[in-house]
Image (cartoon, rainbow, N blue to C red):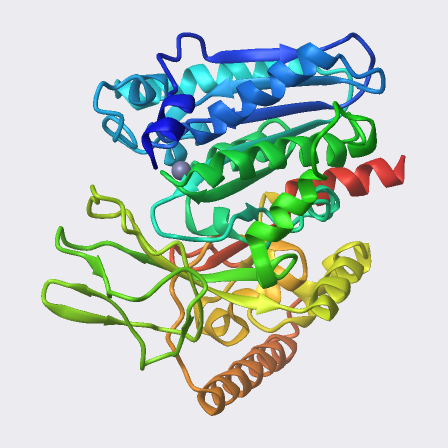
Length: 445
Ligand SMILES: [Zn+2]
């Protein structure tokens, strides 16, 4: 970043968690913009301040609802060296009900509790649906992208952004701020990464994200906003290039195991990797080889990395047809009723209506994608072995035969369908997406 730009974008001390709000008093959606969940990523806060200043200067007639900006990790943002992602623990992994309610005494956990309180306050003041957008930047050069939980209401907001979209991030990482906003507060939420930390265009991109989000949430149509030099969607489309609107399903996460993890030189976001062939990183002097084929997602080049941090992810592009079929299937109540009856190795979860328990030996055959297609999130899962297709087919056939045999044995004993078997710790658990379930309830009246 050159001096002049650095000066213009200097953040200064962030005093209040609530960065400001614009609310001319008409009913409508609430758009919550979160910035600085990671202390070394001030771009989102700078972008929010710019948008808020423009709204206050122009006061557009057409504005409906409320825009509010919230800072994430004040302690890390105000840390004098400005390179601190977090103090003791990553705030974007701490937002689970268990941790928030625990009496653990970590600096970042106090931040998490205060952030939760600010989000709840925004929801209590809302006079319409709430959309939460958590703005970030990344450590490697990367086009901007959206990461979100794949519910139909989230898809409806995300389609306004001409950006690539990554699904199922929350399945690999517990405690994401955005996920908390959905599962605990019922808000449509997404993470938007604006580009590399120090790249001045990241601020410009995140500003365009906020204008587009106001449009997508229904607060302010782009044509009626303060006189913008260009349609903000053009800024996003340009930054995304030929990745715009492509959709990827995240299927694998590699967690850092030692303190000498390093991404292989030349490997970047969106690069193609091949199962068993591509060396993605080096760790402990050994090559780290891709366990599946797909695209490299969020390769970790942070200057400070800790054991257990994300090393990288692998994502697979899903086509329009996949998305359409998935939207159709997940809206059908009979599909959800049928799954535990027709899929071998899958049963209802005792005491949790709408959740499924999947035997791990068959889970490796179905893999994540079947459940994603049907609108389920894996709340508990394990890495699946990188089996070849014939081996998967063979294991699948064996599982089907096994389940037929157990039905026959049950009939032989003249038994009724008995109580559900005990859940084992190695079983996978899948649950429908919170917002899909809420949307079903709305439709049912
Ligand atoms: Zn971040």
